[in-house]
Image (cartoon, rainbow, N blue to C red; front, side, top):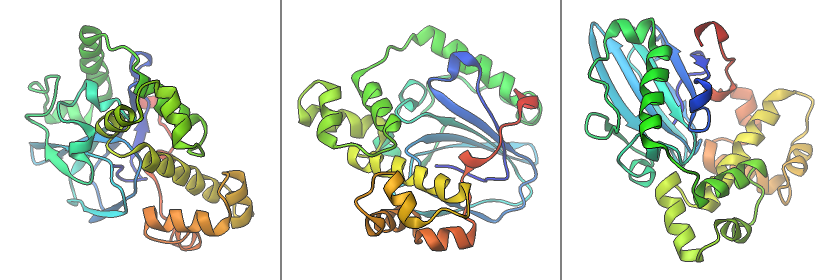
Length: 259
C-alpha cells in the first residue's frame, strides 16, 4: 500500500535499510482520497487529528484501490520492504493483503510513548531508534525467501517462477506457501507487480518512449502483453495512466533535511 505522492519521503537509518524502504510524512492533508496501486509491501500508517492518533497496518493490494483520506489530518507512514514486515508485524503479509487492520494488537514493538508532538517533529529519529532497537534484539537472519525476493527485484520481475523456486532451494509446494505468507501474494503475482512498477516508472521518465520500446525493454512478450498486465494492476491502460498523471509514493523525492 502506498499513499500520496505529495508526501515527503525520508530514507531510514543505515541499520534499517534492508527491512524498511522509507518513511513518508504528509502534514495537513488536502486530499479526500488516494488511488493505491499494488507495490508488494506492507505499510504502518499513523493518522493524527486534534490530538488523537490512529494507527493501521495496510497490506499490499492486488489491484487499484481508492483509499479515503481525511482532510486536515497529518499522516505518517513506514513502508517495509517486501517480505520484511514479518520482523515488525505479527500477522502474516498474506492475512493483510487487500485489507487493513488496527495496529494495536499486531505490532512486535512498542508505540505507547507516541505523541502528536513526536509525529509532527521528531518522528523519523524516533522510529529509527525504536525500530533499530527492536531489530537489534531480534537479530533477524536472511532466509531463502529473502533471496527469492531479491532475485525477482533484480530481474525487474522478468523471471520464470521455476527459476525463483530453484533459488529457494526446497520443494515447489514449500516455496509457494512460504512466499505467499511472507510477501502476501504469490511469486508470480509479485513478479508481475515488480515489472508493473518498472513499467510505470519508465513510462513517466520520458514522454519520448514508445509503448513498444518499453515492452521490449522490460522483456514482455509484446506490447499487448504489457498493456494487459498493466491494466489488470492499475485499472487503466498505459496510455490512460500517462494522460491521468497517476503518481506513485515511491516516485517522490527524498528530503535529506528530515533524515
